[in-house]
Image (tube, rainbow, N blue to C red; front, side):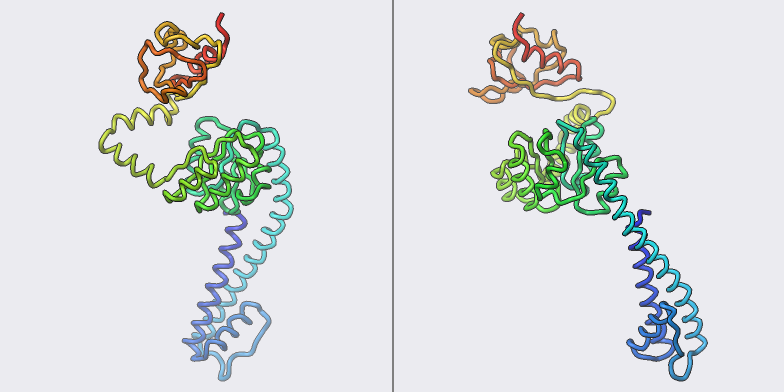
Length: 336
């Protein structure tokens, strides 16, 4: 149990003992609420007192013994936990901040995850499986501690503030995931991230269609509604389970290391101004071309082998790390 949880547990027990003691004195000694509460408090605080007028009954004295043992014990436990928590945050917090700052300063091309709730936790788990470097920004102390326990690099702060994004290395990041609870906060995170780094890719969570449109206007590259995605997945699982299994194999498997990536064809590259058939891209790289996106005709899935790849076109391909690396070389290296 963390120190913060221990402190909260102590406070809860102390309040519970006070409430039970007050109720007990009211029932056993037939006194009012204030007199019962007063008797309970001075019993727990051990300041000493004289019994109520007429003295306590046997049940009242048994209750007093319980209140003294349980109340004094919980009060001491709470005070100790509170002092430990204060020292931990005062000393350990500064040390953790310096350690986090050094770790983040050494990162580049990483992902910043804003929010470590249910959605954020799932995002982090998936990115960790892919070996992606991630910095989490979380405002809640308990969630931040859970993220640290899970091995994440955590910046404790408000992701809607520029200072937190800068501390997370926004200037060197390649992507931001805005996954906090409120759509308005995700919109502000999007605006801040784009203002600090116009080239960063921002993917934002949104639970409302109207808010999704506003977040896109604010500069988000993609907006995801968890409820909509979940509904589509449920429909696909019941209607086209084989397709879902294939996509899970591609994007989520830890055994079959395949990915879907985009690569831009440079001017004068091996693949430029050459048809897919003549370039023998499948034979030379091993990657499977799923589609070609051009400025003129848009995205063409399962392109014809005679399709000519023009400079500036984007190839959507499926393959392992080695195959995709070769494809990137063919799309960027000058013709021999």
